[in-house]
Image 1: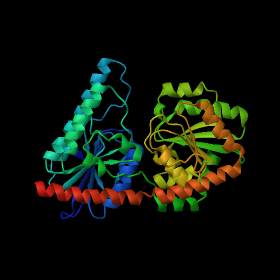
Image 2: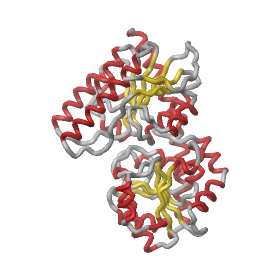
Image 3: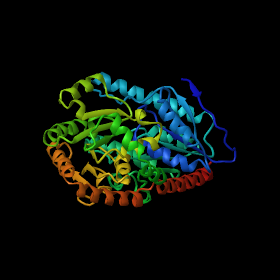
Image 4: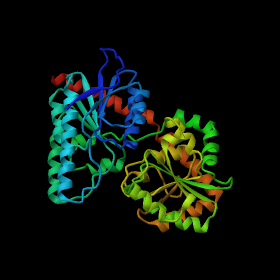
Length: 420
């Protein structure tokens, strides 16, 4: 295993150290959530991110934009499907290897006087957390989605592991929505559960306001995609994967396009899907009525993405498994009426009929009906969009989440220093 520091930013030696860790290459909302915290922490903490070699240049640039530095380690989590026992075993080995290499990278300089915020599931990677706790660091993680229902034996194992971790004074779990917090009840000890803070993913209010003042994103994306002036653009954003309801969206789009010739669909994604998925997309016969656009194509950084999102009249994300997507919150903050599924943390942001429309997951007919309703009613779009914007800016300001997280970092640092 090799550890390579590929970027260095000198930090004051008197600053407490914050180490942020994840072990996968495909980035998304969870990383944006962490970057928002890091951006605010950078003024009073020496912030370093540890992530796998081969991470995208876009992610590395976003890290340095926060004022943090980064270190890469060998090995990354394998998130591809594992239909056979052999594939499952291979995927588990890759997970263990990535965790071992991340641990070595963290321990290389010692962790006394440090807080580690890791993006690894504690019920699965519990030994990783125990090793860090034994080193004297304050340690925390964020649970983004509610724990899924599983077998009784696996549930029992998860409870044992989480009880062990929750009995350590300088360990803390954050949750990204109240639904995830409730799912942890009974898995951790009661006193620990009572103090689990909800740290919602949030929007950069300043960047939102700047995006709302700029019209070039709206014009340029519509012109580049060749949309007629009277088009109604339905936007989705995030990785084009099944758990985000990509095929549900396409089935609904096929129905909508037959009924509403002005409807145009765009999916903004950090990376294009596989050739096999692209072939499957072509079978829906949507032609240029559906466009996949890489986020890097609309500009560099979140401000450019936010400006481009303003090209949308409607936002739709029919997820099956989702905590609380930042893309939904950003669309709401921009005044775009959202359509989401009534799963996990999404109803904590979208109040059906008030700040958007909620539909069941895996229901293309309901999604098509909701889209057609908004396409046909500009006044409804505006009313829902205005209410969504107010709710997002008031309730989901990323600076509030960062303040909660940093306060917990300080508490963990104090506790860990007492035990060293």
